[in-house]
Image (cartoon, rainbow, N blue to C red; front, side, top):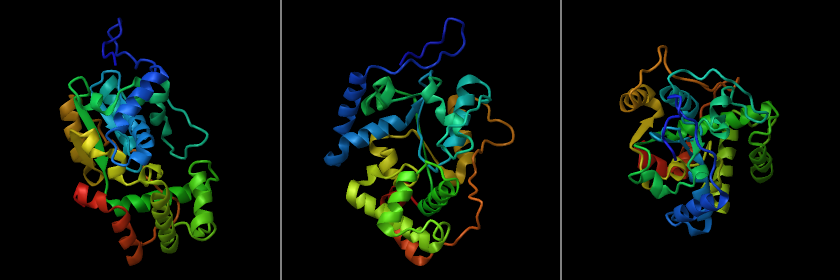
Length: 287
């Protein structure tokens, strides 16, 4: 990427995506690092697609679903351009009320490693971003949040997660009239995730409940700054110090999820399921 400022002295926007052949070359090079050769190309494509980059090239952020990505991208926008994002737009399919910040890459304000033809080795090499950023979350809390989020998409009759909702109905007998936001429904949701991992591999699971170790691939991405969602103030303070910007007054949280329904308590069986499905997350990230 060209990190120079525009002739006006203002920050430049990101360059246009490179040709498909260069993107494919980056995917092939990254796929060679993937442990599961059967799903290596899919995993490499998804990994490079989820690494967000700014015009300056100072940082790369791997945007993990249900891990404060909205708040963090808004803060990174402010760090990059010196003011808060005020432009807004609402995609037809996205139930995130602050989805606009996730559209910045699609409109050339930010970009994706894939679109710039950057392989994993380019991200971690001497010419890559100085800071590689990731956020992790306690796996049970994240799984519950993902479950409530898919229930919210059903109530909205949204196309968001429609494929998984239809498949949950068919595969685990999920009753969308009675199972959302219940302990029984949560167990069925976990059964569905386990079924999909067994059938298609963990890289095929939706980003909002995919195992975090699968998503981040820490041995490949090699984060230089990794935050915990339970300690976001600590992470944001470190981020501001490393990138040299002032945190906004009043905090940086956005899109705190509310499903509009009463909370439920996962039972012992569900907790065991979470421990099994997300065993690597517990071990890798120290939960």
